[in-house]
Image (tube, rainbow, N blue to C red; front, side, top):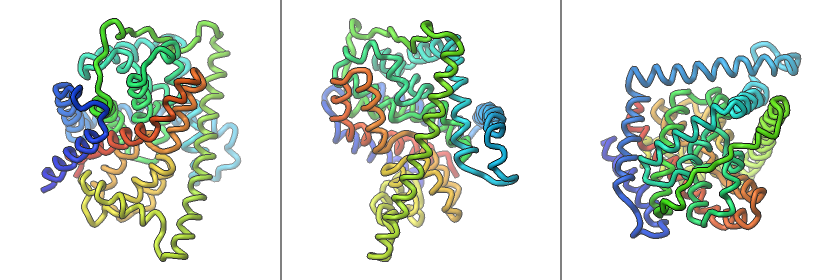
Amino acid sequence: MRYLITILGILIVFGLTYLASNDKRKIRYRPLIVMVILQVILAAVLLNTVVGSIVIEAISGVFEKLMMYAMEGVNFVFGGILNEGQFTFFLSVLLPIVFISALIGILQYIKVLPFVIRYIGLVLSKVNGMGKLESYNAVASAVLGQSEVFISVKKQINLLPKHRLYTLCASAMSTVSMSIVGSYMQVLQPRYVVTALVLNLFGGFIITSVINPYVVDKEEDILEVQVDEEEKQSFFEMLGEYIMDGFKVAIVVAAMLIGFVAIIAMINGIFDGIFGVSFQQILGYVFAPFAFMMGIPWKEAVDAGSIMATKMVSNEFVAMLELGKYSDLSSRTVGIISVFLVSFANFSSIGIISGAVKGLHEKQGNVVARFGLKLLYGATLVSMLSATIAGIFIK
């Protein structure tokens, strides 16, 4: 029965994607089938094999070490504020982003990341049937972040037609940056974070290939990217810039958390006082059918739907903290929802992405803003597809 629901869930995701397609006649089904099969294989390996456990343990071990190093800096500055044995979200989860951002800057500066991103993108372009620039951008988004990635393709931004610009923006919203992955692992189980990162990479190509199908001519399919103008900076100028960028991200996320959590609490209080039910519970009923088709038992679908809705109307961190409050959810439901939460698919991301593009090219930024809701729609379907496939192997 569980597998039948999963198959039905995948078909519904594709049906919802197909309805939003710009040109149904241009959809190429062979790459889609290949990528779905790859998703299933990768999910099976990561969640259900010894090799997958070793890979996940190694990756989580690296981030655990990085977070430990990051806390050395945090404790040096804020050590007197945090009492022994206490957990403060801002200090323990958000501020380590500063160190991870600095590390990414160093790897950028010594040309390690540009090399890795470029050639992984080239390999992916052979699998997904899309352009080299689109494949590069998907990998770069998963490393640099949803706004920073556009700096690396700023030479191409003003030359891109609307359909290719949509794909680049969709990749940015469907993935998460490496600077924030360690923070996710403080809140969610690392195996689900890693699985989501891998599945979303292919899921972004799958959903975009249906919503926004096109073929890139060989003349257009160039990959001349400029990851950043590090050659014009000294090492310490670059390092200072990345440290400040990381700090800005931590502050922005903290501010958004304060605002969204407070607003949701206020709205819940108003709804509870008038209707006797919270706003999140109402959203839970709306999203419950989607939770069920992802493989979540119906008795837990309303709670799961509430967490899914919270992510969309606020952000993934708020939803992750909300998930932690539901201690009675089954491990299967927690796993599926955890995979769903690992992406930037929320309303605030529309503004972040359109603002990032507008900062580089105003006209193209306005184009992005006009298809913003369609971006969110597609990115949410990517999360649903990843969670549904992961659910096959989560017990």
